[in-house]
Length: 99
Image (cartoon, rainbow, N blue to C red; front, side):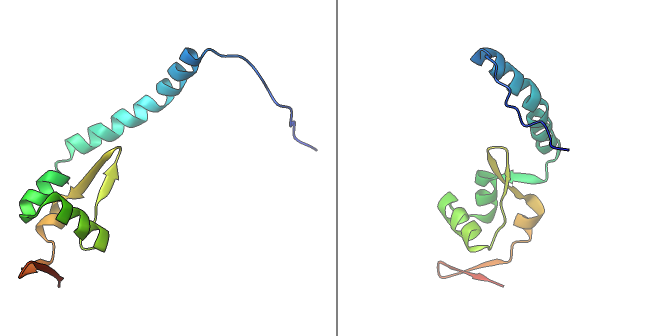
């Protein structure tokens, strides 16, 4: 039995389409943000850099090299507090060594 492959075409004002899309995705976005806010186990980039006593560009380099793991939650880049506290980074004359 061949499935129905007819195209359905209709006109919908852009405002109505926008409302429908937002209504569908909004609960998912809000839940994600609430979960992050309730869980204080994450640090922002600035907080992570401050705790490691490094600059934001250096934090980015460490992440790119795989010395640190970042987590993208929505539009935010966060770091797990436990991973930052136990980061095996040692500074040796301005160069980082990974233990």
